[in-house]
Amino acid sequence: MDDVGRVEQAMIAIRRRQTKRTLAGGREVAGQAFDVLDVIESSDEPTVSTVAAALAVDQPRASKLVATAVGANLVRRVADQTDGRRSVLVLTDHGQAVVAAVHRRRREAFDQAMSGWTACERGEFARLLTRFVDAMP
Image (tube, rainbow, N blue to C red; front, side, top):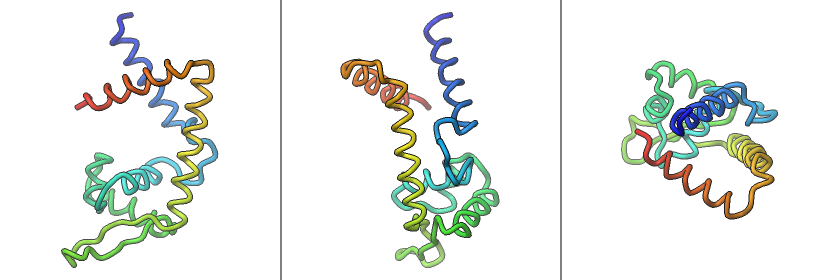
């Protein structure tokens, strides 16, 4: 198998582990419900439209996902100060705690996977993976 094929296989394995939530540990929020929190955390002014675009779902599906997160006290809607017709999504304290716990679990899983690596190997992997992700369409 060539290098590109090996990368493809590795990415499939990562996706499957993410789908199974192997990398998440004992997360209380799973699937697209958690993905909503990820989108909100990483966006400057997250809205339902931002969530829809990031998760590649239609607006009604994104609205349902956001409503579920609001109902679970993970997210709250705040009126946009520049456009009163629009709401910006903000993580609640509980939502922030959930996101922080998942970040810790992910980092622990990644740290364990690279436990036998030297600092130089870790740095090179981080550099190359970041470069790869940045180049993806």
